[in-house]
Amino acid sequence: APLPEAVRGRLAKPWIERCSSYFGVAVSPTGNDASTECSFEEELRCSEQWMYVPLTNTPEESKKATMMFLFDIRSTSQLGAGLSILQTIFICFAVGIGAMSFSHDVNTLLLNPIERMISKMEAIKDNPLYAMKLGDIEYRREEIETARRKEELARMSRCWKLFYMGYNMKKVKEPMETAILEKTIIKLGGLLALGFGEAGAEIIGQNMRGGTAGVNAMVPGQKVDAIIGFCNIRNFGDATEVLKENVMMFVNQIGEIVHGCVDDYHGAPNKNIGDCFLLVWRLSGASEEKQQKLADMAIMSFIRMLAEINKSRVLARYRDHPGLLQRLPNYRVEMGFGLHCGWAIEGAIGSDLKIDASYLSPNVNVSSRLQAATEQYNVWLLISHFMVSLCSPELAAHCRLIDHVTVKGSKQPIRLYTIDLDYLQLQVKKKTAVEMTKNRFKLRQLREVRKNEKWAEDFSVSEAFNSDEDLIAMRATYDPEFFLRFAMAFRNYEAGEWLVARDMLFTCHYSPDSCQDDSATDYPARVSDGDWPVDGPTCTLLRFMRHTYFHPPSDWTGHRELTDK
Image (cartoon, rainbow, N blue to C red):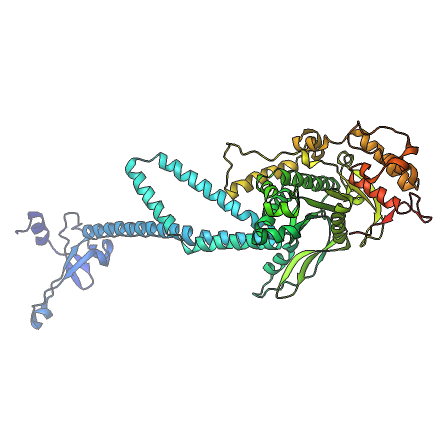
């Protein structure tokens, strides 16, 4: 193409620009044709110019003159730079999106589960019994997640719903290894807490805090103050011979009631020994008000056990069992309870091959002996005076003092109390149309709500004697006159006035019509064993005094030795 007129005009002018060893002229319309400075060196960088030289000159021509053409490519360079910037931005954006997507997957599938697992392990290490609640917390978290998904699904269109449901169904069918591992930790922690119980919490904690992989179960014990309860299934030997392999189900059905009532009233089941259950309420670290409330709740938990065992539809079926009725006419599931308080050593018992986390103390033996003595006194519960002095005056007023004895394992005499309840007045629960939830996590949540309500300041345990229908029905059998007569008879018995005590005990009938003040002088002549009151403690005291013809020994100090276990 022909050169523009302006370019030809510039080329025709003198070449006055000096660039190194060259002289030249700027042909660009924007160039300054009057300047002698090299415009390329001042205005253009190396990347903004192209340089061309003829390569066909002969050596002679090159010695005379050399031509060089320089082109300004700033516009092209700027366009390339802009495109490079856009390319960099696009790459950064793509890498950022990819990193965010990868980070989301890493956080969701790996980092967050690992952090949750670490937090759960730390929680178990600090409080091993907390592991029992981890399953509930995980269940609550899953419930919240399910509710959130349903809410999102309700706001979506039909197509998005199908896609969302298909995506989540795939996630449910293919659980990640981290999720499996996390749930395994929850289950293992729960099994540890369930197996070792409150007494084994220190064993679990010490081994979790250790820096080695080895297990040291033989840790030193620690002294604690506690309320110790013992309960026993009566006629268990006969039940075992009759029920045979079904005896396991029989014990577990009773254990479900026993453990549930203890847990409801902030106790801890510790050991199951065939027909016996060891139950503990720890007092160490609790204030006096809290200890008093724990004592009230321990007694009330035993009362609830008595009521639930006699109202249970499951246990009521054993009343019609042919084998049991043949061995034991009028059979029904009955239990004896003993309740005492004092110090105990909490720790591991056994060896490196097998251990049990439990309590060792003379006070544990005392509680066991009180439970065993319930059959001697023909009562369902025996409570030591240490326990009665610990509970509130309102609840202690419902306890009846029935004897003053020395028990093997105790250095000082113990006053024995009972709570008179006629459980034969209770009716078996009827099956209702109301559907009960079978979800164990929801049941545990409801139980936690009930347990927390019992710690409220306005909650009075003893108020149940006035408001609970079962308690009112079981107490209706006993007239206030009966308690007054027995209390007067016992004071005379303790003071050594056994003849007076005998005559008063003969009048200790439950109903007011039977408590008639007959002539006491006629009792020895006409009252036979069959005419004695049906009250168990009354008959026990009469039988004991009859051994010495109702005259106290010369060394009588107000208490006797409990020889029968």
